Image (cartoon, rainbow, N blue to C red; front, side):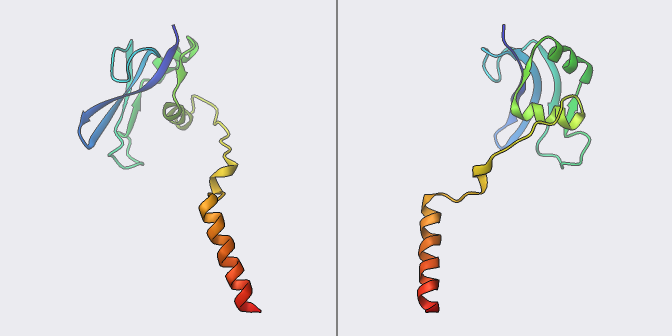
Length: 116
């Protein structure tokens, strides 16, 4: 059974509230889970203590059992000090797309032509 520690969405429309749960990866996002490990309220300020609440002992237990955290939960665990900070490398993030590269080239050509 492949275990995940992930977010299950709750709350009403436009007012999300998430539960941090340990569940089988084959179950639906908001479906059956084995244990509720905490809560996450993205509407609160980032420095608020109530924004993320986790039972760290139980999270450690599930990690020891082989549960894999999702990307967002892994960031929460990094902030809590339970997991090493992963190196995120996306060198293409700052590279403009094809259209913007073409526009920049045209602009540079125009600037060079007007400078002559």
